[in-house]
Image (cartoon, rainbow, N blue to C red; front, side, top):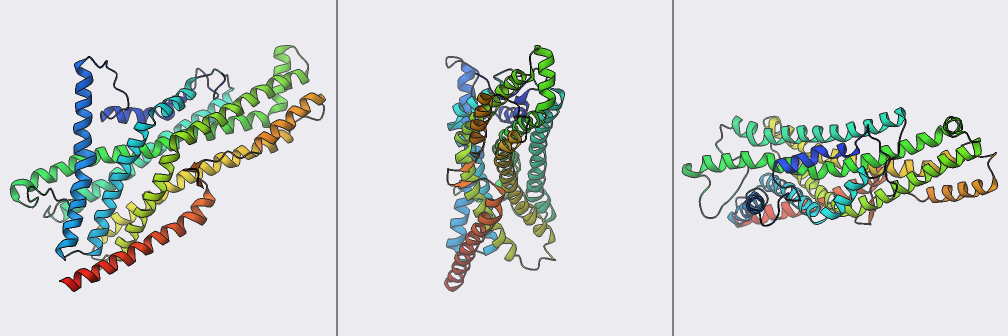
Length: 417
């Protein structure tokens, strides 16, 4: 079976090598490379269970308990509640996306296999297109990792350091002991500083692995369009190499393009199956986080005196907006370039072709007119139009609901006090 265009010189799996290496580094890779009878297998299982509890279960649970006790105490402030909810939602998003990838690991493996199966050769121009797509995927991973890491470092280390570590970087309540007790404060503070990097790395992996596959599909469409746009030159080269007339050479190249287009469609269908839940989860939770962050910004008293906190909140907000934009940009590019294929074929040198070949061209153009659309849970298309016309009104509705709820609850708390 033909698959996505590849060559010995271009390893398409480099789109996701950083993601796989990160998951393996933190011992949360989906597969354990040891037999079940080996003690190494059970050590790996135990390690994953411990890491799951320490990184993905205890922190959000402790923060949730803190919110409940804070609200019950009657001393809750909108800013503090919004900030804590923000962190809980971010950690839950990373946890749920990792769990979703784990449950869909077979589909993810199938999708990864499509990157390495097949063996079509490509010209130097096509290699440059594929290499450009790989570099973009890796740069997006590194860029988001650095941006998120710097933001978390400021929140967990810089801001508490400016306050001389008088309070914990992350508000938590462990029920069984007082976190502000000097006997436990240092340990809890160190625990928070240590578990955060893993949460950030897992969030970046789960976020950018979708971009990597979408970027791969985008670069494959670029290659296909490039071949169709340069059909005349390819026909001359093929006719000289195969010692055949131009009509036969056109048929050979056209067949190759049809198979390539079919492979891209299969790849996108598999990608839809693998990341449909991811896209919808990101949309909903990001909307909640952006709304809560907006509430947090509006509730900051004396912004000039708390400039560090304002900068951190704005950086946090911009990261989530940028994440949604990148997904919508890739989804829009895939749809737009998929529809462009029919126009490029029609503009090609088809006038002198036999009638049978012309019929095949008409069928291919009709097939190419069916848009390649990635959707979030098969409800909302992932596109720039969705980002500009649907997401922001949705964000504002979420934000208004949260503002009304938090203001009402704040009034209730004050009346109780």
